[in-house]
Image (tube, rainbow, N blue to C red):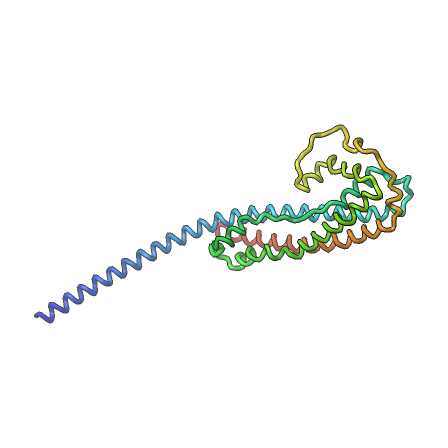
Length: 254
């Protein structure tokens, strides 16, 4: 009887332990489900923020590519001007093209959400491993583009603009920017008070010495080479942004 009683107590104790273990496992599972739901809600919020960020970056890089295409177009037109009769060349047109080749557009992406995810260690909240890798690698993929943009910046700042200043009246060509609202918008510059005509503030200058100068052609050819290659790099970055956007859209509210 004593043995049977002991066996009954033992079975009862084991049953109690099993119930406690099962209760703990159920509680852990419920907690895991709750945490998973919270993570998924947080992931959706992050995905929405990332989508806004990369759509903005896509819009910006498209604008910068378009501006560089205008630089290329103006460079080719100025090369053609060297072969034309100066009397057939419009000063306003010449000034507009000169100004465009002096623009130094750079891609400056908004990466606050991406950087916050990486720095805070919350990148794991993105379930899609491919998307996670693309977001974490995007910033480092910009290095070659930045190098090419710096090459154009140095060419323009250190050589082209000093050359134009020496051989032409650059004040009037700079007025083109003030009169061109569309161009200012692409360069993300604010509005200015409108005057009757900005170009009238600076008199026209004789452009023939500039067009006839042998170094001018060299600068134009360098600008064409640098700008074309930079746009090739920009197209690659644009595709990376598109891929990230497509991956984000696929993950939202799946």
